[in-house]
Image 1 (cartoon, rainbow, N blue to C red):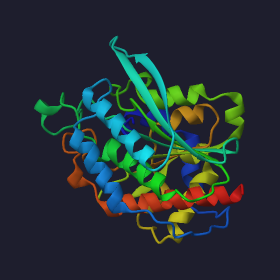
Image 2: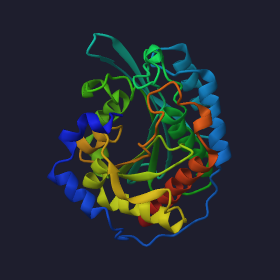
Image 3: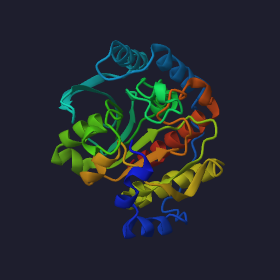
Image 4: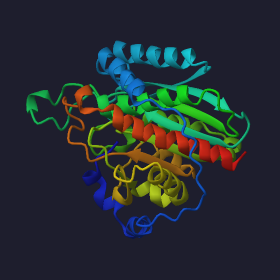
Length: 319
């Protein structure tokens, strides 16, 4: 994702300010039912450790291939059929970047589509490391990468046995964090590929997209994200309402805290109501210090339970 301050002048215009005002109040558009579904933060944390044990997962590397294999093995173990989407991108320096998106689908095929996403690649450069000698080193991405993947993998396990009334697509995006600061064209390459491939028929069926990114911080505080509030105010409201009813108001704050270009942006550009669940006030972002000790199972469980209850409530709306 792109750092807020780099794009502040582009984003904090009148519409974003208006969105921030709207977001100050939870409107409770939907009656919420809590299912007390099982989501284990400890199991999710094991997925964080497994990914980080592989090393940095930079697109095109052997470690990246190992991460793909890990994600696929876990999904297949849970009974999912896995599909791949392949592509490539030539960046501003002329490098060809391979792209491999991973998708698992469950629920009512042909029904309304809800997309859940996270990126599994890690940044090839630690741009903001406090030690200048390490800024060309790849990051381990325990929070920025592994945490979102871990939440979706555990969610896939927790959803087994539920007869969803929607077509739920769980997508692991590649090459989100490839670009250089300020070069928008070289970021979120996997989500751009996926969003651009959606047919008009699929767009008509798609009711929303929810992204989870950087959600394992031990000091988890998730604010509403500005682009999400503009594009999908009702979906944002539903998610934060569920967090409130689960007793997670101290983690999910009902006010816009930042505006971030991330993997939800390509979906917004195609007219899809997309929301980014992200704790962007993370001091180890794009540094070599983004390691598993900065991630806590409790934070993963908070995020996972909110996401799981959101999926089940949306399914109920269309059931």
